[in-house]
Amino acid sequence: MARAKQSARQLGKGITTWTRFHLPRDQEWPTWSVDDEDVHVGPLASVEGLGRISLGRMVEDPEQAVYIIVWTTLEDLKNFQSSHACVEFLQNLHEHNPARVSIEPGSALRRLTLDDASSLLSSSSSSRFLALKHVKESPTANVEGRVTLTAFSMPAADEATERSWHDKVTEAFRFFPRGSESIRLHRNFAWQHYTVWFSVIGEDGWVRDNFVNAEGGKAKGRTILCEFRLWPSRMDVTPELEEALAKDAQAKASWEESAAKTMPPVTAWKQERWDIREIPRFEPL
Image (cartoon, helix red, strand yellow):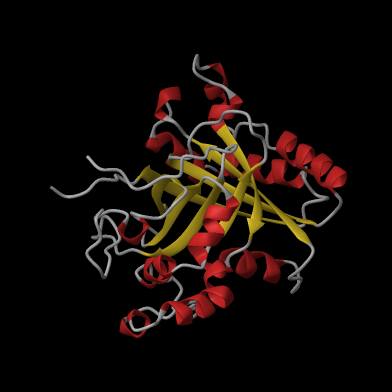
């Protein structure tokens, strides 16, 4: 089977982007307005610098989806954001919130010239991409399966101060929600397979909607840190256990207690639950 084109460069762990969009419950994958060579990745098929590509659905609101791409370098992402392929990509991933439309979907975009697209992209496309960079370069698990995303907002600071704040936050979240302590005892347990940490290097509308409002309208001078907590079957964690923990009052209290330990420097935090799976990449026969 043919694979989507990838860059031969491999520098570190790359950059991960999240693009949120609306995906009806009865539709398994996004559809594309043009017949591309790869039916699953559409306009991404010939894009340079692609790594792993995944699709996520929010547990509480399954029609809120996210398209997740790992890029080899930040330059690869920027090149894509200034390309016509990005226009096609975003026009087919309609925003879940109809009140905010960064790029108008539909036939109007199909008539854009490449110059028009570049002008439009420079002002609006970046707002559809939440760009994430691994906090550490050491090996970690892939972010897949049932995942709890916790995002923390902190004031901007110098590099040394931010590093110490990151350490404080990650140490405070080195815990197990009540009822899940047995995970620690599993033969396959390792923290790098249970939690994966990223810092935000490019904000999207979701960040601005959740943290600008929570922080009284502050739009600049902040750092966003994200923990992705995995609930992997390799540690005998079932969806039923994760569902029970999400509803359990004591488990919820343990999240709140750990979050309280991060303040300060954390000024606000937000949590979501996602189901994430890798997107197959091949050409139809």
